[in-house]
Length: 278
Image 1 (cartoon, rainbow, N blue to C red):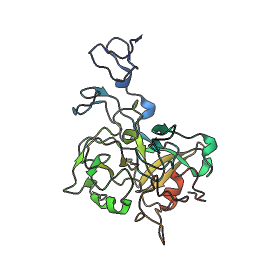
Image 2 (image 1 turned 180 degrees about the horizontal axis):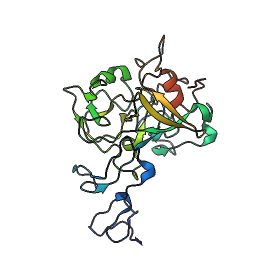
Image 3 (image 1 turned 90 degrees about the vertical axis):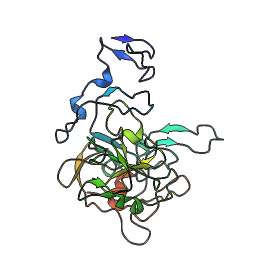
Image 4 (image 1 turned 135 degrees about the horizontal axis):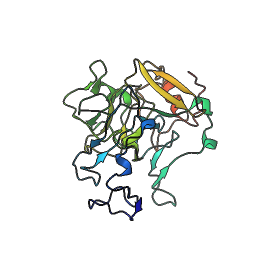
């Protein structure tokens, strides 16, 4: 095993400062069985060629994603879930512009009421289940609501509606890559809805990503107390005054204490004060 500070035998430099190999076997090409769900069983594949340093690289996938709470995945978001992503904050203040994650002590809602990990299908084709739709309705400041975005995916046919383009994306394709658009999900749109990112950039760092699986009727989710629960596609996403998917996404300026997205949203927040259970 060799550590060489970032230069791989093929001349590439990805992952940066983490180049480790045995001969021509790179760690990120290794299929790790604990990361794979037998109901999906994706195989390693070549990353898309789009200027990314990981392009044209064989990458091993994973079927598990991490909860960012009841908001969008990526930049300019309120810290709502255990894996919060990137906190832009006030860039004039110390500590702004940083990756965010939370400790168990910050989970005021309780470990039995908070989701940590769920499932995601790794897409085989651009318009397949697990793929990512491209739409300008997904914005970093959460201007739009999940209800405006949801119709862009037909859950019955498992396909994105036109003219909203969809692509294979990198979602779930790289088990080593911790960026949230690759392996984050939010508890807004119910399980097995479409996932979406910004229409101006096919690999934007923000999006509205859903949990997904090939299990009938829902997904498995691991709570912070170590239990695994089956989450139905029909789980409550809120109803009534100031509740439900018609409410705009929480963001840095509009961040309600309690999730407006019902049981599903409440399970995603770490300190919303919701008394939710499955």
